[in-house]
Image: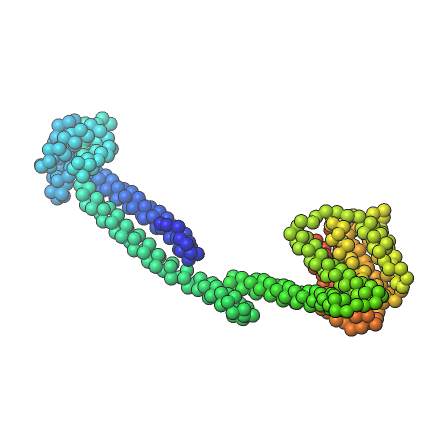
Length: 441
């Protein structure tokens, strides 16, 4: 049999192998048992016949005398009586049988098959005072037994073939019906994929293993759909976020090209162009860092204290104050310093814009993770919006007189998760907002 290309064919082939092996074993066992039963029956019949014949023989003064019996006609056809090796009583006919019977004269309880004549012989001793003086040899034709065995063999083979054919057809139908729900699920999935449908398998109740499979597929499809929606929304927000500084750069360049402007106006225009370009560069660099982290290209290490010191050096003078603290001499994260910098930058920028006067950053390592917390003393984030702030373009109102772009926190969490960590929002105990970054050590 060629290897099947479908699950139905594979299951059908395995089932046929199992059933075929069992039918073969049963057929062989039946014929072996029948052969042994027939042989035992023939032996018992021979012994009974020989014992009956021995009762018709009398020993008088060392001489063997055959008595008359009403069963003589039946016995004479299959019984030889020998005094020594001399026949006293013998059936007429086949000389080959006679020679074989003579060969058993003087033996005791010996069975001998004659395959050429399809016959079996059995010898019983005749004793006088413990000494064997003669032998009764009983014969039995095995032709009828052989025909019975041949018929049984042919019948059992025919029955085995019939059973195998019936099992083949029945198994094919049963497996096909059992796999019908799988085929329906496959067709439905193909249809939904082509149409972009939001259907799920769970709409059809199933109370078996297919029901569990359908629920697993539904959960997987939900996660994939949510991920796609998130990526589509993020792409749309990125397009919008990049278009705004790009449009400003184009507008400033056009104004500079159209007319002469005062030195302070040109400086302001150049500054606006530089800030817009830097904003675009930061977004693209963050996305590149996330892509490299997803691909496993960046798996270095860095000292969090060094990264925080760089932020303090770059922090704008005046206004909101930045303070940092590190638990111990140093805290080492299993992430490149550039990646850590791009994760923390949106959080610090968000904290600086919403804080009233202070932003505090703490770093510590415990339980195989590095935790960096960015807290401010601003208005904070309502508890019901702690997860909402990480959605691209999320707006929670002007909590402190400052508007947010709505993209920095989403990019920060995206990059942290790509690096094997996460970012979550908390409500600070003393008021304000706190964002905790977890990174691998």
